Image (cartoon, rainbow, N blue to C red; front, side, top):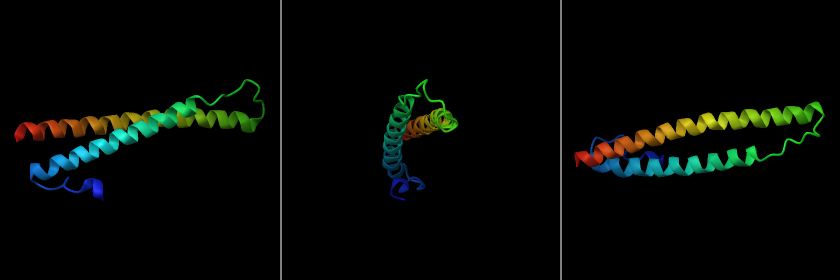
Length: 93
């Protein structure tokens, strides 16, 4: 678990770099998830799709986009908490 190295230590000098790495990983993940969400939003659910399989596909894409919005919100919360932890550690040094 390379990304967690130092997170659970008691010394701020070890925690700060670990929190920064975690923040960078989360920011990268946010970018990746947002990119997938944009791509799925651009899937053309043509009006000409008439079969039940095509309608089910369009519906599932819509559900996935909604789920990705929830994931993005959770990742943003995690990133904000990491930023708060980083700020607090920086003030304490």
